[in-house]
Length: 541
Image 1 (cartoon, one colour):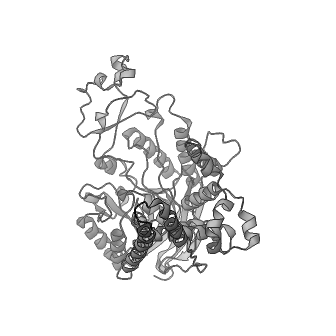
Image 2 (cartoon, helix red, strand yellow; image 1 turned 90 degrees about the vertical axis):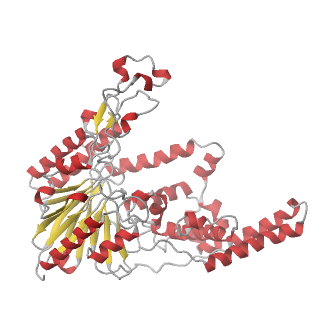
């Protein structure tokens, strides 16, 4: 396979398109802004002279209604008219097994129940007036009927998007709505859909794909190798969690299990492009047999961060070059001189400021006003900062640091390397929290965190120690090496707090002060022994 040229293509995800036809008056500028960002992204892709292949990895529409799908397909036809070959997946926002209709955007009438969300809903025989809430009961009979839009089924989408992949496929798995295409004779791609009809695809231990689908994948990989071709895949849900914080907060259906990742790696798929999370991330997993898989997650074009990828793939030599392209604007919207990225950043920060402001006092003031200097005494020794470093960040608001970390999680490539004061403070404070969690005897919080420590959650949000998440050139067949040796931060804060609790327990123990003094230390020691004996690390990927 030496001498085979690299192929270049664009990857978009989570376009969440909503047709203007399903919006009612007053639907809101935020929805129209999303659509404008989507159209801008497609225009930017059409203007890439050196890219003629485009992958879109699911959530093409926001609500799965047929009208939005048909209008989005027209946008894709314009892309094809500009010389691009378009291959799409459909995913969780694009279809519904369990309902046939949705209300049009902007419908303000409130209902006690929404039977149109149920299977086999009869549009004609429903008594809509009985469903209106009391305060809306004075509506006319015509006004009682909600403006409904039909939602697509997986089979509908399989036909509707036939021209965007299925028609060009060299192999198809009908039961999984999945297909394989050739970018050229030596580069093939498996498009693995998320709209399954023959397997329950949720749950941490779910195989996600049916045995028939796995057999088809293995057969196609074998055929590619027989023809001397490199084969990779696109899925909607990621195979590797972008970071621990996402895995902890996500529902079961938001992530493919490690089982899926290992199975595909063992079958012989070393590279996958995914979406769904709206994160920008490059992650790796290795199977029990030692097979490595690289999962490249692409953010949404119409949320923070609004961007897509351009990839240059040399499959023969295991090399890939990634470039992240920002969606520059939202066509037709005046953002006050800001870029779309800046607009979404400001919107993101303000959203959480409003949430904190809505909390009851004094909690809202404590959270919004807390600064590094307020927490530093708890973790001073663990932080290992010089006086000069401490002075440089002591007045930083904790809210601002946390917001930056969350945006790092979404956008990738955080800049707080181990030599920065912010890194030292956050890791020192994380070590303090871990010490308290490991010491307190009442509940095993680590179990709720799926085996992760606070330090393991926070560290990847501070900076990227491995392959950069946005612009990078690397060998995806080799495990990535860290840029920095991760320092170890230790704290005895938990032991100190437990000792103070023991002292405070003396005057509160009316019956036996001695028992109160001994109880907490004994419980703490027993818990530490239990943790040591049953050391449970996070799920391995």
